[in-house]
Image 1 (tube, rainbow, N blue to C red):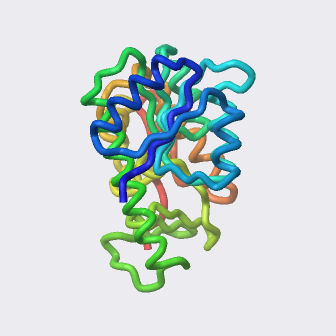
Image 2 (image 1 turned 45 degrees about the horizontal axis):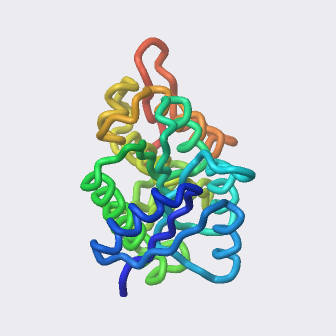
Image 3 (image 1 turned 180 degrees about the vertical axis):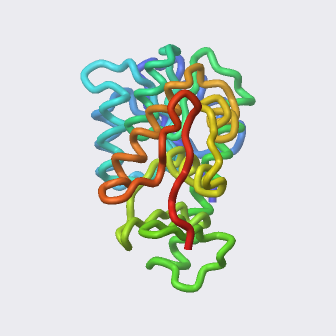
Length: 239
């Protein structure tokens, strides 16, 4: 079955360009010219495998749409926007986007990122279907266990005191990186290079994601410590 991509953009020329690119690569493509239209499609049962989302749209911005989608559906969302400032990207990641690509975009890079996110979500979906409940006999290689915290790498699942915590893809990757290197202090630059791997333009992205992780995980116990003047270190007690 072909992967289905939903384009949400108020610019018809951009929609037509993306449709040509994606259909030539074998994708099924649908489109919406507003956030309201996109929500209507999703509410009526349309289930794309990935959404390409513009930010600057009338009435409902891409940020608002992304936030609403995240409350109801779990699928990769890639912002495709002319807003290229670091603060715009940080806001996008903070509200749940999986990626952020600026216009004008390189076609090959766009396709590579789309395929990477589709592969990641497909792995998560398969493992979730095979193990709908929390795994009880997982390999120690794929499950990182700490006091009050478990990280299930195969299913991108995190449990704090046996309660599942919802993380974005990048939040999960950041947590996993730090946990796999527990006790080692990393600068923001090092974290940025290891987790993101390509330039989004601002180290504030790391700061925002660390803040989000702490808010979601550290209700009773601290897992990530700020090493003032240096960076961050994972301090969970390994089991």
